[in-house]
Structure formats: structure tokens, C-alpha cells
Image (cartoon, rainbow, N blue to C red; front, side, top):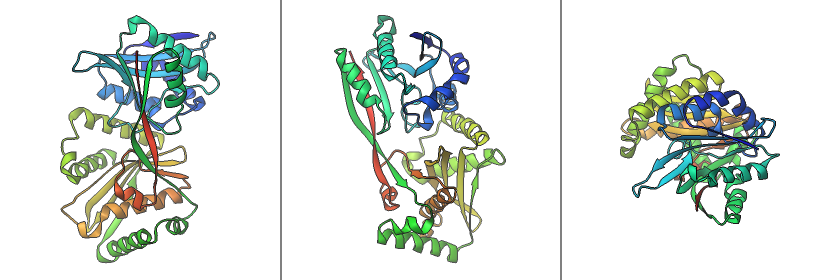
Length: 335
């Protein structure tokens, strides 16, 4: 096996052609592990301690990729984490060719065993429930005499979508079915309402600004979420994803005013609800956020998507729409 470690931004570009080809062969391949997401995150939110560990066969075929970066905690210890970890990336994982799991794990741990790597803790965050990292890699770690702690970080509520809207409504709680219909009827009959989606670069800059403004208004704790680097990251990512056809930025207007917005990714036959915002001081009586959620579920069904993933967070409203929680795990490795 061959191991190459890239330590600066150019590593992303050098791996660009191989990255998503490996992702297509990987045993688990979350959206947030795509090359364009990882590169954009690093460009705007990374630091100066990058470790892109690429594992190849002797013939040079890329079969494993661990995008990691380092940081120093308050105790002066160096920890390694996934690129993207943790606040704005809902699923992360190692990229491992399904035909080379054992040799990739062995080679990766050999690489991490090198004293020159100089780490105290390896924090692999936001592993999906169907990842093998928190099971098989954890076993391989323990077999070396290292410590591997697996803990549940959060849940991602997910709806398995049927073929039509009425079938979806029939499958959820009767009270919630009534509430969805009542709220849609109320806003459509008592206000001048329009909902639409921005899914191309046309008008995208203004749409992202409007989304950020609504997100900031939603709750007090979201006011401090945005800094300049994060704003630039979201704006750049939106452009990249719109060009690839994966962006869905929904708005609902009430009497000509944007009342709520939802940012999602339409990817791999799934709809991923990334974030949302609404103005709590206007039109609260119409529940525009809940109505827009219903409209986006309708749209995902219309598009033939099989899953509607609310992503991380156990907010009650997600389960009222019929979602079922899927756990998300962290794996913490120490020596």
C-alpha cells in the first residue's frame, strides 16, 4: 500500500479527479464528504493544520481517504478531526473502497501510529448510523491496544417517502394530518401566499442574503451563529451546489413579504433539509415555517425522492411530520 499525506490546500486540487470517483465506490458516502463540500469548507473555515491522508494500492489506485485536520485544546493536546467537523456538517465519514476495507483500516492505523503524526486524540464526528467506522474501525483500534469510545452524538429524523402526497398524509398521526391540512388551508385562504424555490445561480446571491436574514431572526441563539467566514462559506457553497443541480432554497411569501425560508440539498434521490429560518414577529398566526415544510415534502415526493432527511436535531416539529430518528455517532480514539 502507498500512503500520501497532503498538508495544504493544494491537496484538494491534486485529489479532485480521484476524490468523487472513490466516493462512488465507498462503503458509505455522505453528501458532506463530496470533494466540493470538503474543499469549500476548508477554504473558508479551515486552519493551517491539514492532514489529507490518501491510501492507494501498489498500482496507485486510490482506495481510502481520511480528510483530517488538527487543533490544540486548552490542555495543550493535539486532536485530529474530520474536515467539516462538527457544527455545519451533519454526516461525515472516512472514504473507504468497499473492496478494500481491511487493508485501508490497517494502513490508516499504521500511518497514525507514526510518532511524527503527533496526535493525542482522534475525534471522528457525525458518523451516520449505517457507517462501519464506529463498528469495524473501532474493533481494529481496540485490537491494537488503543482506546475507542463510541457515543451517540445526536439523531437525524428521516421520513421514508411514499409515491404521493395523500399516501404520505395517510401514514402520519391523524391529529398531525389534520393540523397540516388546517394550516395550509388557513394561509392559502386568509393571505396572499406564494412559495417558490431558487435552484440555479440566477438571483442566488440575493436569495442567500434573504435566507441568512430570516435564519438570524428565527431565535435569539441564532443571532450569533453567523460570522464573516461562515457567511462566505455558505455563499460560495450555494453557488457550487446550484451549478451541480443539488441546491434547493425555498421561500414562502405572505402578502408579498418573505416569511420563511428553507435550505436543502437534492442529492442521490434524497432531500436533505440543511437549515431554515423564519420571521417570528410577522405572520406567526399562519405558521409559515410549518407550511413551507409541508410544501417541501410535497415537492420531494413530486420529484420522486425516497427519503426526506431533516438532518441533525431532535426538534419536536420533525417528528410531527412523521420522521423516525436515526442515530448519529462519534468515535473518539486515544492511545
